[in-house]
Image (cartoon, rainbow, N blue to C red; front, side):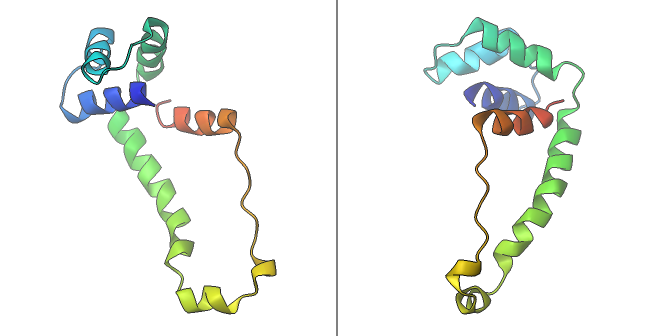
Length: 103
């Protein structure tokens, strides 16, 4: 996660996202940067419009937040047995979803 965060910091600062820049941010944060992971990050971001990826992720996340805004009284009135169980998401599925943000 820290590798992606370092790229986002560079993007937010208007800097080029390069191997050296990502490595410098990681080192400044006290992370021992893995050169292979840094190269993989830079390669995965090649040709990706980060602004567009963030905007599309924000639009997709908004409908998911709507059920959380339901009144608490309605939730309390429903029996606990009728509540749907949350699906377990594997680490691989979560990583695949996250990588979709960057292409």
